[in-house]
Length: 171
Image (tube, rainbow, N blue to C red; front, side):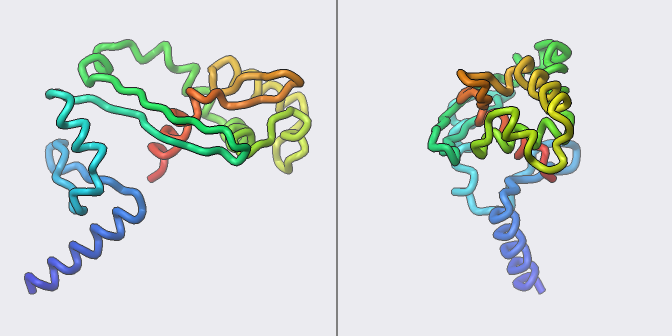
């Protein structure tokens, strides 16, 4: 029975690793040791080696977008700094992501559609006035910027934070 249970645990760990799920929380809210091979947590182990308790978080990524632009980004913050900081001023930044059309606009811009005309031509996006309204909110929050010719782009320094936010929102 013990062998069978171990085999099931190993298979589950492999499935979770393949799905990108990287750990779990144990009883009492403490981080539990992951049920996946140690090399899956290479970034976490590197962070633990460099940062003393109470720890830190990092956003890191290396992305090549469909239009050929690249975005390599790393940003970290200590746990104490994050918990001591005021979060309320960030509400507008996150609120800009709180609408399905704005999320779709960001995805389409990352895929290479950048003008309001191109975006308004997509089914289900609403009127051109609504598109402009959403684009303004995304620009104001820093998720988009406007280049020459009215072409919108996600600034390189926002690509990885945006994609990690989307990743964090998945369940």
